[in-house]
Length: 213
Image (tube, rainbow, N blue to C red; front, top):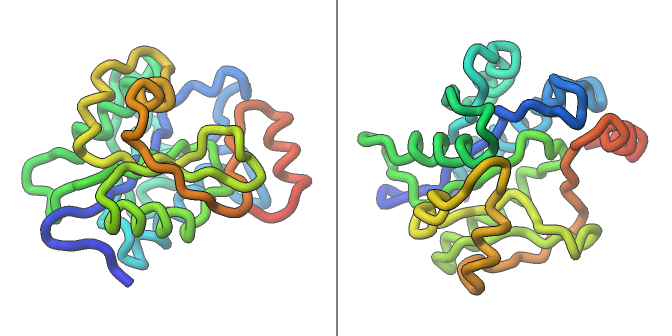
């Protein structure tokens, strides 16, 4: 079932320009179950696009990062180089949103599904539930996973009406801080399972030993 309309649509915004200091570098290319972390994310996004829940997507990368870019381009995402990636996550969020507001994008972006590139357990059905909720309720929404009930859930589907809030972001601050300061602006959707991020080598080993992604 397609939820893309001529009026507006949800697009993916994959954040993949981090330096991975805690991991030791090249985190998104590290292997999990025989595929790079970023490839797992790309597969889920590509499936959601193929099913019509996402009209397309962009991936924010570091300038010249061709190896990582190849996996994202293969998934059908537009590459958006961030010349200010060293200044933190906030610049990548704004860079991606600016790209989604480009004149001539059809259908126009009504929401951005902001996806962290280091969450390889992302599922295409989770994406579809979030987009369906946004389309039905007209509000931003994020998941709450049964196995991580106290953790802020990702990805966050941010309605275009809230994009201006990202102008207040600085450094490596993500969306949680600004959304917390606007209570009621983002709904929570309960989902099974979990979607942990990979910050360290130990995180990766834990996922590698915990079954298929």
